[in-house]
Length: 254
Image 1 (tube, helix red, strand yellow):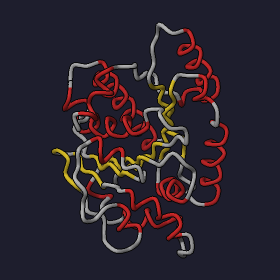
Image 2: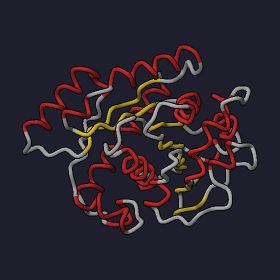
Image 3: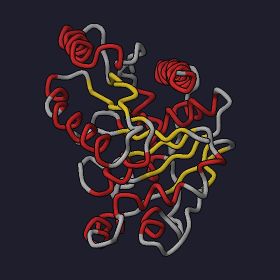
Image 4: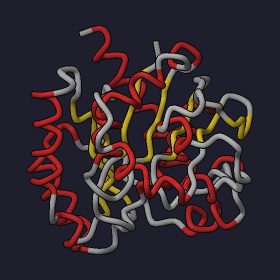
C-alpha cells in the first residue's frame, strides 16, 4: 500500500509546489511509482506541468461527481489535476457528513497502484488541508531559509497535533525541507540552525539550494529531471528522495 505525504505550509512562496513536483519526479527516478494530487485552487502544480484542463479534476471527485481520474504526466508519474473551481469546495462541502474523510475515501480506489501519493496542499489551514492531513501518513514542511519563514511554525504544529489526536492517529511530521538555501548567506545558515533546534532530526540533511533551473523548469512545463538532469536542483531533489526512502523504510520496519 502506498504512503501518503502532504506538503504543507500556510505561507506562500516557500517552494511547496516545486517540492511536491520534484519529490514525485525524484521518486520515479529511483524506481517508484508516484501520484501527485493538486489540492490547491490556484492549480500551480497542474500549470507547472503544462497539463490541459481535464474533464474530471480533484474538485469533481471531492463533490462526489466522479472517481479520481489520474492523468499520466510521464511513465511512473500520474497527476490528479486542479482548477479554480476548487476554491468553492470548502463552502460547498461544509455541511457534508464526514467531510474530513472525503479524500481518504477517494484514495481507496488508487492507493494500491502507487508507492507514494503526494499532496500539494493549499496555503491555508481550511477543510481541504484538513482532508489531506486526515488521510496522510506523513506531513513534510517546506521552509524557505529566510527569517519570515519561521513565523507560524507553532500554528502548523498545533494543527498537525490536533488532527493526530482527533482524526488520524498515524499522522506524523515526516520531515522539514529547507528550500532556497544559499550557503554564502549568514541568514540562511542561521535559519537552518534555528529550524534544527526546533525540529531536531526531523529536518532533512539535504538542503535545496537556490537554483535557477528550479525556477525555469515550470516555465517550460517540466519537472526538474525532465528539464535539466544535471542541475543542482535535480541533484538536491534526488538526494532528498533518497532520504525519504530511507526514512519511510525505517518507519515501516519500526
